[in-house]
Length: 579
Image (cartoon, rainbow, N blue to C red):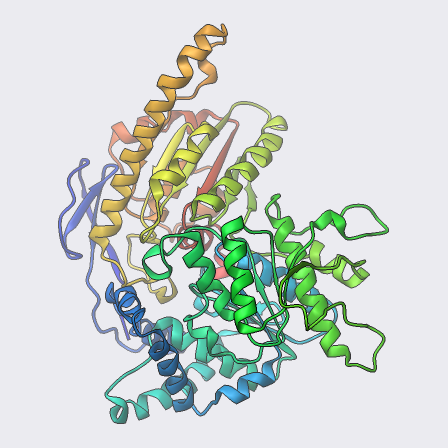
């Protein structure tokens, strides 16, 4: 078990320099914060779920996890063989996974939304669904869902100890090895879905496809590939062709697969992979090509980019339903299994159940809007350049609609963080035209006061690195913002436009999500005025900079750059999600 990670010093200090270890103080935005190293925590009655999560967190392997994956690229088959070995140590076999009637989905962006649409459609038909996704936003049990709901704490605890116990008792004869965090959760998901007897399981790939641990699946019922782009380059490669090769690794002989439209080079690789593996592959039609009786299909998820995800979900669910119906049923196959090239998938008239499923789909943290009085939060976990482009389009359109209905001045705030190898500078450059009044940066640390929420703990990166990244992001924002001012102001003067139409952004860095939210909201969000959430004092000079926030009729906050950041924000804005 692991103790709560963070605590705050009571003293007050100015903005200062970063220091090196978790046990030392960081001074950000007028706050002095001390992050405490992990220690063994005492057992607390009634904390069995937290005990399980804390034990799960021991499978995080610090920053060496990704390095192990990178080294494993030279022997990728060994990675999958190791996964099969861990699976068998729990008493499961790869053959048993065939009973799960799996829909397997990969992609760079949109794969989670595609899975959400697909699961909702098939659940609306009345099937008992399993859904495995990553990462979680607030609690780790969100990753494993049955009938659309995260499994209960009791079920998570029960099945966790079953799987962990079997692995732990066999580790000595296997060199003391235990599966890493994501591998363990994948095995746990398979175990739970089999024990709970789901009718189907929608499985989202973690990273890549060919050598992802979910790819021990041998016979899915149908596969899907959402939009491809550049991400996880140190693991998957630094070109779209290399990434497409990895994603196409989930293809299986004779198993129908669908993809959304891809860049030409990526599509060529997917075509070659499908021929090599002898997997029939189709390109999904545009969403407006599906005939309906009641106008355009309505989607529960906002944003134009969701339309291709919805089309992919229609093809995946329709194909799964065809197989479920059987040859003697009335639904005749649309697919030609002899076709090994990429053809256009046939559009069809979605059933009323499909129409209802698309319209009722929810997927927290993706183009999600929350209204709390004068505060409106726009949440999107975009973390690649392409997904950020989609996020910016959605935010500008949605925020403009809200501003037209505002009773007075609106202040725009960006709350941003990015992790890992992602190009935060490129994402921030895309966000500059949104004209924020404030750009606020913080690490994916929910709060700097003592907290026992093990679901939010991440030991794969040091606090020093997280905070250094935030300061780098702030400098990058200033650089891009200053350049834009130099480009735009001459145009404004030339066009005789008032200079006030261009907003000058104020920037701040905070040590945790809660302190950032408390400063942004200035006591105007009742959810964040809970006495249990102690406000951290800031210097008067920092408080004075918040005058526009206190005076505005409304505050619009875009939270983006990291799904973990969005999850930490939701923990505070939606306390029920953490129970």
